[in-house]
Amino acid sequence: MSSGYLHTAENKELCRRLKSARKKAGLTQAELASRLGKLQSYVTKYEREERRIDVTELILITTAIGVDPVQFFSEFTKFIARKRS
Image (cartoon, rainbow, N blue to C red):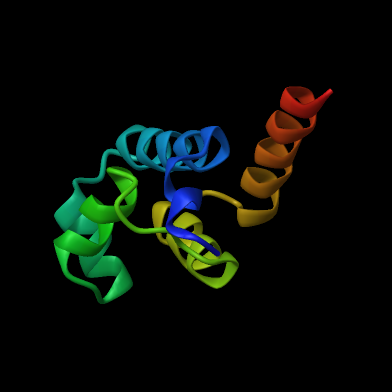
């Protein structure tokens, strides 16, 4: 995908939801990164929309936060459907 994907409304909403879920779980970026075996900059970059994530990463991130990835994805796809209708 092109770099323009980083700045779509959909990606912005995905990043916002991931950040919100992390905060709701009471995790810092550093704590989440540790759970993922990544550097804090990994979390910082996707939360700031500087890096996109793929579906595998989405599953790993939501699981590390303690959120059901299927539920998260379902709610996000509903957002996209509403936006496009």
